[in-house]
Image 1 (cartoon, rainbow, N blue to C red):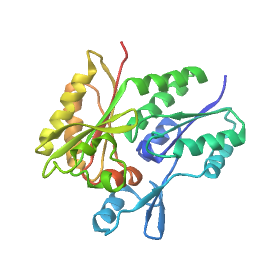
Image 2: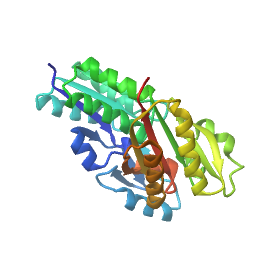
Image 3: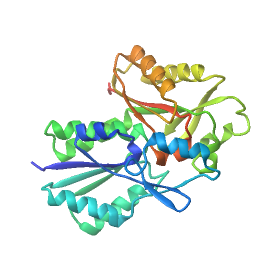
Image 4: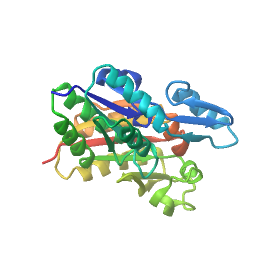
Length: 282
């Protein structure tokens, strides 16, 4: 049986402890403030990033790993004795990271399967969790890929923001742009639909937004039970913990908790509170 390694990128918003527990290799993307480049999660942690973001007069930029950087990661893993690498990345609609990974895989000509998660943040994270669990259970390569596909088809991602300013400035607003101009003191609720942001509601307070998120997840369940929940926040830790309690009470599953990292946070801002819920297919 193949010895399989799961690779992802820092936009999966796994904590270092989560990544270590899962046995996952994380390749960071970069965030650029002026002339300084920081590796997401290594050179800069979320709490430092959001403080810098609040005081910065210009929006920082982000950059994906190059094919060469992916080649270095993959070669190091093959040298450790892995036969197969499954590399899971944020939506190709939002970043060229998956394409860079594919170019690296083609260059090496080894057994590397690159997966476009068609999601972002904890939406990538739940797919990585599904893959890592399948690997630990001794599943075959095809079975691990099936577990990822099942997670992708059966999870939903919802988040609320204090403002759409960061999504608009970063050019990542997608089909949520209809909300622009109508959001004075309104909290938008965004769904990640096949890798694209779509507005699905708005609320007049953060509490209302969190309650709406729970209700929308409940409606999306369509009778399915919940397999896993992952929550990620920007600098809004208290609101994230409130959402954690609400989702746990609604579905009876203890959510994983992390912070939205710098590369995603550039586009969503410090007020982000979001969650991915993976349902058990019927």
